[in-house]
Image (cartoon, rainbow, N blue to C red; front, side, top):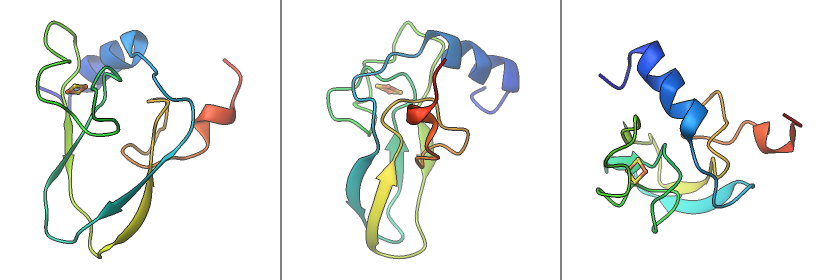
Length: 92
Ligand code: FES
């Protein structure tokens, strides 16, 4: 199950980063989005429904309260996914 901390931790160890910066997106209230946690989707920052196959990752389903501009995590290291928390600036 995705919400299990061990499962999520395993995904985090094997994640892939295509873009090491936040990704600006327009989102609509009351729509359901699937954030890509594996980093391999071709439609970043959202899940393309197949690139995570065979990994320990699963998409994170979320929605927003208001229509607007949001900055989603591109590096996949944020502690507050799907949102950017500045983790892409931290050295590992
Ligand atoms: S393609 Fe990355 S979580 Fe689905």
